[in-house]
Image (cartoon, rainbow, N blue to C red; front, top):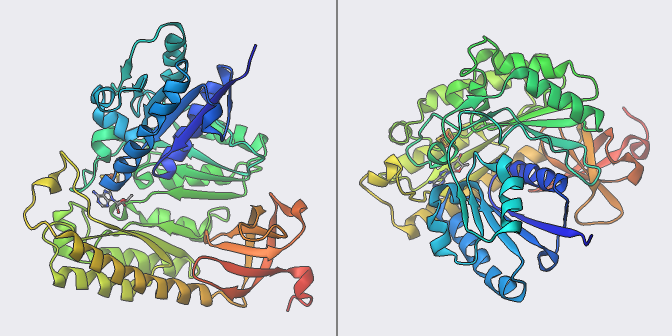
Length: 446
Ligand code: 5AD
Ligand code: SF4
């Protein structure tokens, strides 16, 4: 039988990247082979994002191009999943005529069934119901290509309803996976050669709340820390309100927990934070950052910031800049506020004009670049343990690894080191990466 090829395009966050890995695993079991060449594909999936308008636009424009492919190959099956699919449901079919199926965030596990039905009969399919079970996040998928890092979803959904955010509407209410399932998945990953796991959820800090068995996120990390074969644990993303003292202490006590936390602050103005429904003040946020740095002086702290939220005055914006000056993040992702239908912020007064949002964003990003370079420069001369991920992007003869802080380090080394933990001395800092030298090249360790 002729090989059937699958092409998946992923938009958006790490959660979506992992969802796509799970889609690929399911369809590989149904006989598809994954390809990077869209033109070869018998089945094309777009795993979509709709967190900001720009992300949604990108999906539409790329999907538009697929019409041609379908004309050339009427047997081609085209499906869309992810947040935009969840949001639009059947309306997606009206907007993009050449789609065969639309599946929502809780329906990944039904992919093989949907594809099999389309192979038999071409009738448009839409599956966007929410389910109480966690079927769509418990799919086992090892990343291919000899990768040594894997994602593990530990919960789905979100109950926070931050005023700007569509996630609670598109991924449903928060639900945690049973710890035994998570542990057995990670045990299997370790047996498959995975050394680093990144625990995924919209708000991993509240892991366990829906289970009612007393096991919280810190306890889960301690359990995972005991698994042999796993050398590094990461997690994303955290909500500052739910970051407990117990979890903060894990950064000092759990050797395998990487010294990095992504802790989205969103704004430095208490007025805006309240409008955003974030549930903490700037002072409380700063106190948590101080505590993190107290227990783990080398911890890298990264964040998300939104500028131009409705009603954000120049003074509010200045407070965000002041907060950044005080905290000095290692890096931040920053965004212009993007209005999303159905969210609380949609109804707020005081929308900011795009030019002004752009100006604030540019200024904030310039400041962050200064801080990032400063933070990276502090590491010059230090020793860093790296997990080697592969060849460096810029040079065939160099390797790339990530430090515990998640920072990228490039250095000269034997490709046999890929997948191993090695120590390097940092010789030079740049904005987006560091340069290092292996012990044997440095010579005298002292
Ligand atoms: N507009 C701009 N940024 C947003 N984010 C989420 N929703 C919006 C929106 N409507 C940002 C937040 C969040 C990150 C994943 O995306 O900063 O932490
Ligand atoms: Fe969105 Fe807030 Fe939930 Fe994060 S915590 S997914 S920003 S609603």
